[in-house]
Length: 547
Image (cartoon, rainbow, N blue to C red; front, side, top):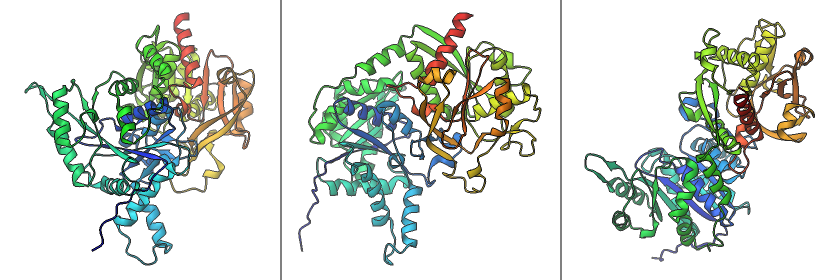
């Protein structure tokens, strides 16, 4: 019999996989982003990708209550909200290659089978599905742009859905060879109040499950609400077959932005580099990050802003907006106290009670007619009471509808999405969308250019004429009504130069009232807070101080 020959191909790109055990929602995305931040600060070029086990091709058709926010990349991919964390931490744009789902993997394999690419062979999970997973994993590494690719595997080890991904990692570890790929396993060390002690058994069982799939974790990151003593770390290391310096404590943090600093203290980046046979290069320069966290925790001011939406029961449905307010608050040395207000709860009779104490009102994106009248009522209140207002996507469209009804006198003004029989469809479906019947991935998606008129509030926000922002919509401002709107004081301050679509509207005779068809929240990061949010928060502060 021939002896087994192990593959030891050297790879110029190193791979880090982050798996989870014991329970979901431990924060794999934040740990991945935090480690990437530390490695980036040491001079390495890093990116992060997410492998999602669900069978949807992407989260674009998922209910926000199911999945939270759908994040959109520059190249038009509808992705998991964790990609928002990756961009906010790294300040580097992601792409469609940064998010892979089981649905997309199987779709690709089945399409190839239909084309005859497998030459009549029986198509199986191994090797065909796992080969496609490996191909997707290595796509980012093969671009030559990155030294390290961090891959977060969704779900929990032992889930039937994630088994093909775990198997693909096992194969890659063998193919790439020692020192080119490591696994970081995130587990829970729970505290039992009745017993008055931390328990390591769940971590031991989680690692055992991973070992059953053929993967020995290299580093354990242990989530806990209590400090894990040295003796307990030694016990975990002994039973889980890792070095003691590879047992990393991850205490519950006050803010997600504390986590990179906590991981720096735990030397997670040093341990990871050592196991990848990479030099530490330099001490990480985290001055800007430390300053950000300091200002976040020590604001000089406070302002109350309302977020009016219809998915507020699940805060993750507006994750990027909430984080953008944190970034903008820090830029203004201000704590933004967000009031989450369900649009269905707002009526003309209670709008003063609901919104009267706010110094700014944001009307959030969404789809469908549920809660639409509450949004319109909130916008009318903001317009008439000179409260700073920002409308995003459907929020902008509602501002257009409100102005049409109450200023131009178009009593039936509406969007054709909600009322196709209206005589005044001030918001209408885009021409290229009218023949589309499929829902997934068919909207106007990704980055598009916008030209801003000089002398407008929008130009004062951006400080330049040409910008690019990310979109996710089917409906647009109906240009047939544009002259009437501008005559009465709602002007189109931003226009797409390629197709003349209205991207921004604002009111002339209002302190700060802007609606945007795009999603500025997708581009706000710790290093570069989005100027729309920064100036909106500033306007809300000025409203408070003027009072």
